[in-house]
Amino acid sequence: MGISQYIKEIGRGARGARPLSREQAADLFGQVLEGQVTDLEVGAFCLAMRIKGETADEMCGFLDATHQRVARLPATDRPLIVLPSYNGARKLPVLTPLLALLLARKGLPVLLHGMRTEARRVLASDVLLTLGVPALTAPEKIANGEVRHIHTQHLHPGLARLLAVREVVGLRNPGHSVVKLINPCAGPSVVVTAYTHPEYFEMLLAVFTHLRMSALLSRGLEGEVVTDPRRSPRYDGFLNGTHTVLDAQRPGTASDVPGLPAEIDVATTAAYTRRVLAGELPVPTAIERQVEHILQLAHQTATETTP
Image (tube, rainbow, N blue to C red; front, top):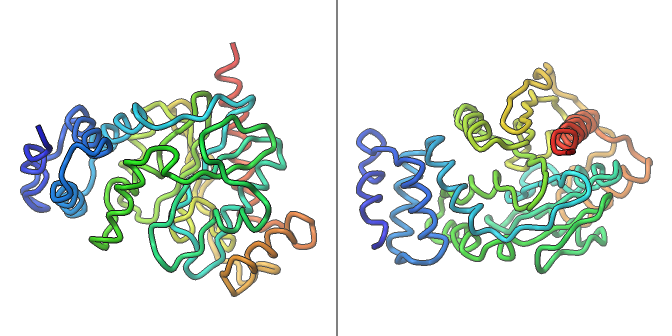
């Protein structure tokens, strides 16, 4: 049976649509991931959810279905830091590679996963390739102090296929939320994620709590999980689902970030990243603080899972 019975519930518009249970959402999303539904049904699902918006139970169900099917990386010696990267640079350089390499320099294993979802963005994966960081073609164990990146296709082809629907309909869909929350690791990990719109905060709070995830949540930079180098946002931490406010938002915007280029192309971004890592330019204070919070969560996660 297809997903038409679910589309009838979620496709009645912003006021008439009814939310799905976690189990229903898992069944629906599982069928989408496995390619068991028609292109027309996928399009209807994407548009209906775009209008209705996801509830916490629905997002938990979508993640249940994804985690049951996604290819997982082997457990790492220290908690794996998971950095989703799907938006890329629009106005400011994409600094997610810098965040990844700063974390690796602290001895953590780091995975960046992503794919192109918008035609004109500069991708973090392209910057990492320019910096000599190889891409994985299949999940494998990441050593302490190493960064690797992987295309979504190698985590689950159906998930990559769902993200690609945006090229046809021009709108994001639940797959774009799912990829920013998944944990593709068989062992302890810390998922670093971000939200752009304040109305998503309460939903994400409930999802991390229900799924007992370890994660760092903050406002992102143009959809990327790295913080804006000009501002210090609020940081919310989750340790096996237990929520703590790690840092309050700090007022003000830095008028100048030393060396931060105005250009956003791959070569310029890679050159800036190299100079910061070499100590020729300072690490932006806001990103330095983000690194500290991730290190703290990684340490607490390791302590929680040590027998």
